[in-house]
Image 1 (cartoon, rainbow, N blue to C red):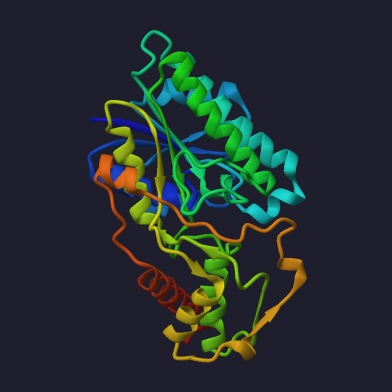
Image 2: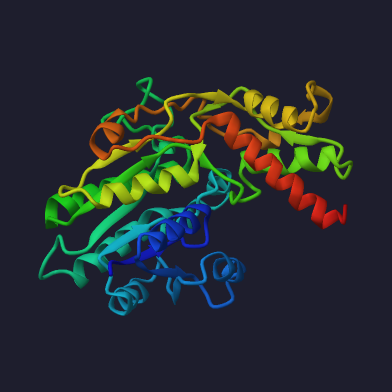
Length: 328
């Protein structure tokens, strides 16, 4: 039985990846930060077969203990402070967790498997936010990285540190440069879930409007359940490498609003949407679109859920949740 250790188990990717690995017969261990983690019950209810360990990406000793306890064949580092807007408010903490945390888990894997460097396979969750001020359209594995947020900068550090450990120590360490991926499990602070929840509440008469930032920003949005399959496929390769994971199709925030409101029978959303400069980024990333041809060719991966299906799925899920909460 293969064994896997997942950091960031409480996030949408951690939950979907756990389900995927369990379905493949893995024994799965998840790293939880703090015994009173507010998402602890969610993990236990969603993936009850996952064995939970206490640890912190900023504490190397706890990561070494987790490695010794789980004795993994594969380590998936999904843990990060991943809300981009927050990274400007607390750049230091974002750097410690999202950047230096990668170094800590890489070092823990290296020390644990020092006698056989490639024995434990490592996956790093890199991000399309690393491209920032894009220098090539679409973005691919060799596109110049120009991050425009503390989060993006921290991800660049982790990405290059993963490459460095692969080249310096012979570790089987791969990075997935994942473009925006969403699901009904996405946190409500992210724009896609913010929209799906608000549209559901507007439909039910619980909320009057939604306040947004830049409506013209464009992203390459896919389904998180599809993207964790790409992560697993990277770990099955004989040689570690880096891969862009994306749909290759871009949509604007306006497109997101179009589909979300249309799902609840509202064609003209203008009177429900307000803009506020507070929700504008200090340095905007205007357009991200990925070239995932390498992942499709080498890994045999391709996205199955398309944009309209994804947004509809999220709105319908939130509509049901809001109905239950409102007793309707």
